[in-house]
Length: 106
Picture (spheres, rainbow, N blue to C red):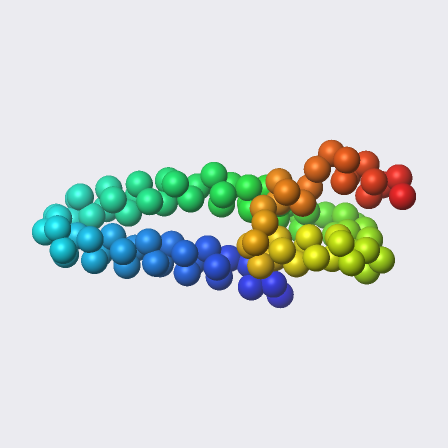
């Protein structure tokens, strides 16, 4: 269990709260409130799409096992994976062509 999704749920919850506060302060109606919230979600969508792509590794247990074994031998890779789980980096920063080649050839 990694807690995957909790950070994103909290982030979108904060956006919803901010939209509600803005709507109240600015006297916006429900439609304007919904539009504002959806616009704020649209800004996050590219980041969420990256995480969804990165999560695909979990559909292949053999690949996950290789990554974990490699990380056990490499403090640098272990830190990069931790940064990904803590959402300090994106899958695009962890999964590179060079990294994939090294993964299978080392």
